[in-house]
Length: 416
Ligand code: PLP
Image 1 (spheres, rainbow, N blue to C red):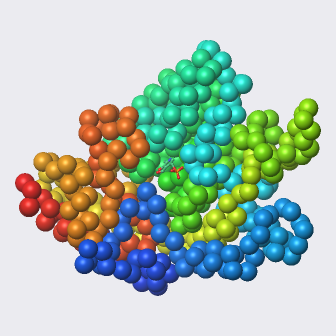
Image 2 (image 1 turned 90 degrees about the vertical axis):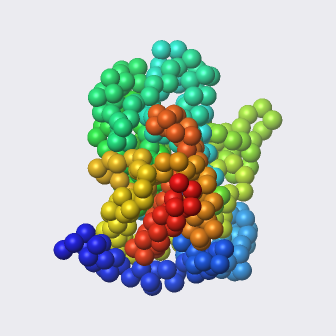
Image 3 (image 1 turned 180 degrees about the horizontal axis):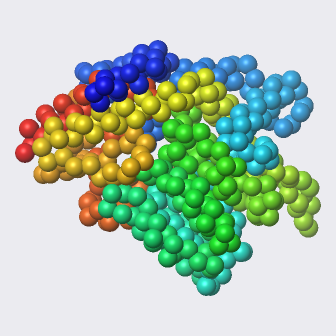
C-alpha cells in the first residue's frame, strides 16, 4: 500500500464524517470558506454530548454541591462526584481522593509547586526540560526563588527529543522534583516519561507529568507511569474551559499543604484554629466548577465510546500526510521531527513571518496557531521568534491537511 492509501485505510476505520457531525462548531463558514480547525493543541472543540450534558445539568440539577439539604443539591453532587470517578477511571488512579479539580494545568502545577515550598532549600534542585510550556517553568522558577533551590534544565536535541545524556547528567541525589511534559505542545514529541520517572524516583525525587498535550491523544495510566503527580486541562480533551485535574498520590496529597483557603476545604473553623477537610476537598476551596466537571466527565465518556486505537491510527495518518506534503511548499521546514510524535506540526517558511502565515490562512478559513506557544526558551533554542503550528484532532480529515498545504502554497506565492 502507498502512504496515502494506508492513511485512507486508517481514516476509514474511524467514521470521521460521523464524528464530525458530533462537533457542531466544525460545520460553519469562516471568512467565506468552510472552517478547517487545526488549532486543537491550543484548545479542542466540544462534542454535542458535552454541550448537552452541561445544558442538562443547568436545566435539571443545578444547585451547590456537598450541602445535602435538598434534592437538587443531591443531584448536583451525584453528577459532580460521578465526573470525578470518570476521571479517576480515565487515569487509572487508585482512588477519587487522588483527583483534585483545578482551573487547569497551570493551576495544578502551581498547587504542587506552592505546596512544596516548605520542603526545599538551598542546595536542592528542581529538574525540568528545555521543551516545557511556561506553565511548567515559571511556577518552578518561583519555587526556586522562594527556597534558594536551583532550577536545572534537561537539554533538547535539534530533532526535538529530550537529550537523555543531559537528563543523566542533570539528575542527582539533590533533585527534589522532576517536572516534565508528557508531550510537547510545540514539537509534538512524546517523551519516554515512564523510563525517566523511574530513574528520578530511584534518585529519590518526586515526579510531576504535564499531561496537557498527551490526554487528547492517549489515555495515561498513572499507576503504570509511576508518577507522583499528573496534571491536565479539560479544554484540550474536548471538555469545557475553566476546569482541570491534579492527580496526586494519596499520601503525598495528604502531606501537601492546601493552596487556597475558605469554604469547602475546612473540617472545623474557630477563630483560634482551622483544620482541613479530607482529600480531595482540602484543595478545593470555594464553590467548585460544577457544570464544568460534568462537561469534562461527558467529554471522557465520549472519548471512551470511540475506538482509541483507530483514533491513534487516524491521527498518525494525518501527521504522515502532512509530512509528505512539506516539500510541496518551497522554503518550508518542520521544527520537531522526533520519532514518536502526536499530530502536531510546527513549521516555518523562509521569508514569511509566522503571524503573516496565520493571518493569511485565516482568510482561507484555516485556523492554526502562531507565536511562541508559551515556550520562549524553546524558541530561543531554535533561534526563531515563533513558529506556525498546525495541531490535528481525530475529527480532522486528510482533505483538510491537503487544504492546509494548498493554502500555504498560495501564501508562499503571494509573499516570496
Ligand atoms: N502545558 C502544556 C504542555 C500546554 O500545552 C498548556 C497549554 O497550552 C499548558 C500546560 C497550560 O494549560 P492551561 O492554559 O489550560 O492551564
